[in-house]
Image (cartoon, rainbow, N blue to C red; front, side, top):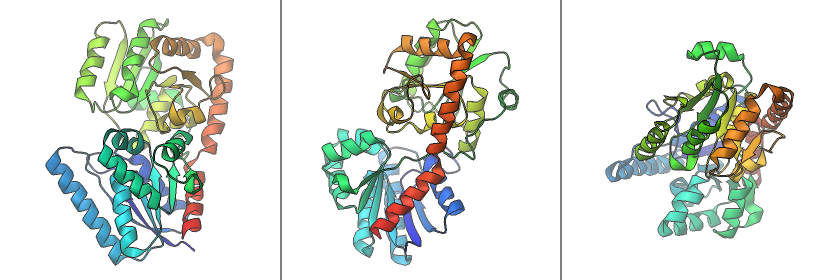
Length: 363
């Protein structure tokens, strides 16, 4: 029987970065609320970059993980992200003999490992020695099997899930008053880091073709890539659109912004799973997203939400116009209800119970 788990992650929210790896904290909190499992949590909360900073923070992360693995008694090691956390988890496995479970979230597979041959080789070495691997989407499962040679039998598809106690329908006007947003506007919302792969530029360009004059677009997220952010702002100066930028907010506050919106748009070029779109569905907000990665698993066009091709600003505009058109209200409401049902089936509590079964299988 599994009673204790060493949980390690190179992403976790801290005082200065409250949205950094917030989904990992949601899982930790859900385990604490709904199971008897004791967790020893070792994490990195520092999002800063630069070689000296990287050496310091990951060196500290490694030493703290080893210290905890030698000082605590536990049944399973769970590492979030293949690299570097999976490698650290493997060291803890060698030291303790406890089984290692690794969750591949996507960026560790698609971006880091694919762009660096040395990281790829280390990642492949680690994955093949894990007792079980959790992939947050079918696309990642396929990548792990085809590119990394991981045994398909030991891969479990379990997404991060949505915390339906936070992300739930609320009164739209009340949410707008709380946030100081206009009640007489049709609000289009994007939530996420302002980086190229999130496709914010396509959303901005789509506004040129939205037929309603009372639309306000809100971009809620950190301008992580300053050069790309400048490109977005420069393109915005060329079109006539009402766009407001807001910094990232704490995880629990995102639900208020989603409930304040008339439509949520996620125009990403790539998404391992696309949890933020699932959170929008859980709030009952009509959702438009690109048909990519894990998004295809729960955004089904004109059934649970609306799908668009990658990089197609005109298609985004067409879907926004469709959702905001009063003539389509009955259809949009029906799709909204189905989206709520899908979100409930992906609740964090249900996903945590599935992870618990994985722990029991390997222990």
